[in-house]
Image (cartoon, rainbow over all chains, first blue to last red; front, side):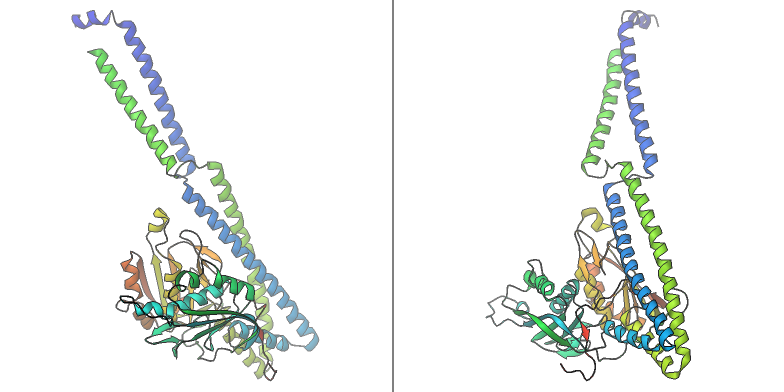
Length: 255
Length: 239
């Protein structure tokens, strides 16, 4: 006890200095900790850049949906006024409904249509197959046709057919050995894909450097021909009505 | 002695502080921090507003639809031919995807379990979704939707930057929920074929969950279908 007292007296000033240091340090740490905690609480969980991007994306999506809704509302308003004038002039909406049916049959791909567009012809490669190479690289596959159809849709194609088979929402394009089954029907090369839409944008999407054709089909001599056409005729879908399992949702909306 | 003890204490405090500061800097560098709270609130408010507008528009649309339905119902009461016409119209609408439909079928959830988000690499690519849709169609699906987007004949599935995929021009990140109406057993069996699509997905680390359902409800296509170029050829018209 005595010893420590004795040691303490000469260093009294120094010790006080340390205490100040410690006090200041503690104050700073305390301050930082509080700021940290406080900001965490007001963020309601940590706001991160990915979360912000998610938010932005969601806003973009809802806005896109709103635009779609606005468009379809104005379409319906037009339809409603047609119905009203139809009832006023002829006493019933029958005639208008007939027009409506014709339009919907175009949407459901049951009607024969014509318009400008492109024809894409695909054929197997005629090149010699080098040793060790896979013959598969030289053939047209189901996936190639599927990807090209998807790209044509992206470019705004309104009607598409493959070797005369009209492509609908439920068309399947699958490998059947040496042939490709389109909606269960066998087809062999050459594959002739017709698409009605803006010929310029359809052609541009097929020729773009990042297009499927350029990325995956341009190297092994596959024969690909893209042709803009002023007037193209595409037959309506003539397969079975796919209405065995589905039925209209009555009353309440599907959610 | 005392001096050393105090110095050690200060050194410790300094180390802790140093660590805290460096961790702070590192998190900022990783791009997980440094987000202005104001921006987040602003976005949240904007989202709320757009959602409110969306709800309003949905209501307006529903109103119009019920009015149109009244007209058609009234017309179809009139005569047998009108009744047939109305039936045909309903069927055509179902096939075109502009009518809400229901029936037995399956739901398929394709999930990357947040992997893509972490590395910003699309584990689930658009072509996988395209193939899955094609398999469902081959197995006899009558109506399909992905994340509530009804697939119609002009629906595209497109990769748009990073992990997002556009379906009907609306962009989505995983998980992707497919709904398909058809024979539920056939649909599931087709996907679960040996070395089939589910096995391939799972081999690349994607989780696939298939549920057979008594009743799958699929919403109609929400947008406007355009036929600016494809014009109907009337019967008997020369071409």
